[in-house]
Image (cartoon, rainbow, N blue to C red):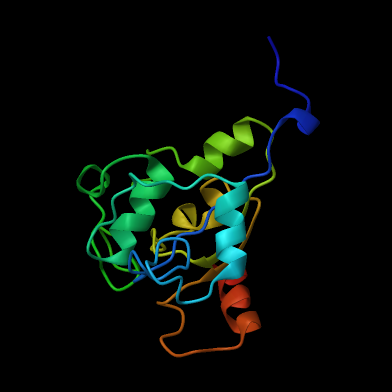
Length: 157
């Protein structure tokens, strides 16, 4: 039994939004406010995960989603963007990006990484993503043009 043809696989788009309250999107809000028609449309046409519990800080939540393990089992700590030793998804753990690549998907990461960057092996392009337009907080702590962050990621990789 081989892989299904590329046309049989669905397109997958995942979004992890920090600090978004339950009623912060129109489809959950009792009043329908705020108006979030694009997000509401994605929800109608896609799948909404209601049982992915977030940790109280962003890095463990991201690591949990990408590893499929509880934040406690990823041993991820919120260490200023995981640019300090001990932060990030352990290199021996398989990520969702790696699993999707094994199934023939093209994988791309855009946005906040915060899942480790103390070595090139921890960067998204080494964790199963073909490309990454990552926000690497330890490269720059202030808003910077996207090309500055992308160039820094290339230099480290």
